[in-house]
Length: 162
Length: 299
Image (cartoon, rainbow over all chains, first blue to last red; front, top):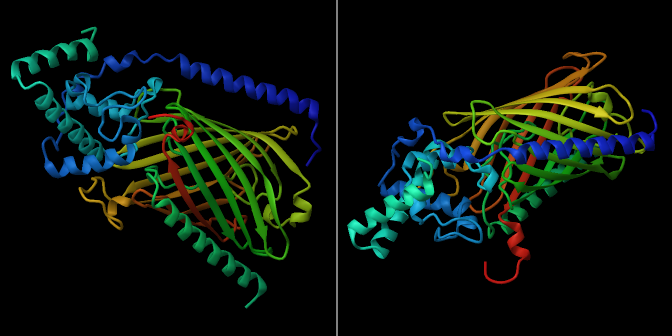
């Protein structure tokens, strides 16, 4: 094999650095507005494990292994990572949460979790939704106020443009 | 019993002890990675932002006409962004009746150009390599790589340092629990050698798709299995499947609950230019939100 030509190597390294920067800029420039545009077919999907106690327990385990470090053990959020007990999350449909979990929000730091099998992702959503019910009952006992607040927050935070 | 066989047995014994020790230590840690079990093929799974995966990737082989060797590569993989993972590799090897040496480093970056899931999810891979010809890690096969490269004595091979840019187009799909991944490799040596090409394909599936409600150790959800095939495709002057090496084999991973993942694969040589069997095993452990350990105050 030929000896290294250091001058040539320097130019090659600069080219390499330029390729890295261009690739990073292309990825960074991508817009995250698609988050608001969950396809209707996805939005209306129903969680096959909704309300299933065993699935909620399994989802809790998976949540503890993969989600708690960012969203907190009690899912109330940590640092800049959002609470999953918020009305924004609890007001979203199962299908919307499933879509978000599967696609992530890469620009905002939420990774895609499509590497988890689909039934496992539904189990996690069953668990997250189970948190919301207890939170609403503890914080807002009046059903009318709960419905009013949830609907309002849902419109404001999840679908502001609809 | 030959000296080479005794040496190999000793390596396996120490390797096993190391795996058990790491497993025991990491049992107090956080989580095993849930990635497809491939040891050569890349999928679209990136490291979660802020997470650090520490892995030791080992390979043992005894090429016909040469000395048995054991290669070990330390991987440090960090999720910079949800769409960008960077990784550093430090490699070394030990060859029976020759020497043990550090063979070089690699710096790899993977980018997801598309921000949502599709039928085929592309990932762009860019890597700078600075390794000697004594490297035995065989992290991929490209160009005309073959058994002949592994027969050069360490004392001679270590004198040649190769610096190159390696690119990969990674395509990955998830279908009904199955992961199917395809890698297309193109490598340019900075010495002016022609572009070299290679490929890797993998398919895998977790043994159970649903998580169980109770923590369990040897239950199916903690295992994934699959197969991968990889090899060279020659270079710009001589493109094709000939005059290079090809391997295929099963792969299995055990994700210990709140512990490391252990992956094992025997890769079988598919032509006369390949080593008979490459035994690969990897121990990986994911430290979640590693920057938290360096922050003060309440998290």
